[in-house]
Length: 193
View 1 (cartoon, helix red, strand yellow):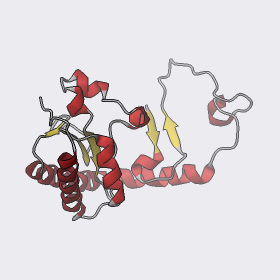
View 2: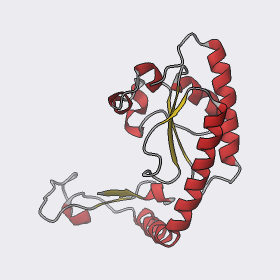
View 3: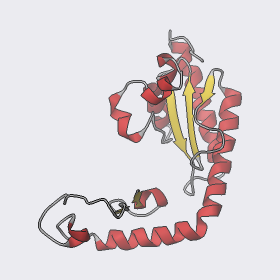
View 4: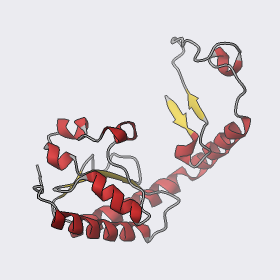
């Protein structure tokens, strides 16, 4: 299991790896006994202390954070679904990471939407972080039965502690404007299941 500090509002560059007791790993960088002999070099002590503080806060405030994040995401889902025809929410409706929204907009390319969202100061992604640069439809979305045109309109949003309560509405309004404009310029079909 891996844990990264920045995903719980801690500093970038600090992470933890938990390995089964019967599993042995080869050193990443040979030469020292740091990190159980798996990586030589000085540990980033400030980042690790920040990771510890972030983990402590996440333990104390996790329930509140999850509830508020999910409420913001649910408000965004409702507003976006009511304002955009051909919008398809993906993923399980309840069993998901709090604050996470995954959707597909039929007939609009995700990269075009991301460009326009970025111009409005809104951060979003198309697909998973490990495949963002690939620029092809998600194999996962195709595996669940989405056609490639619809899958090319995949966006993900995350709402958390750093978002204000009015941001879900502002983001959904911006997305509605962007989709309307891009569809007026496109010859792509709107897709669907």
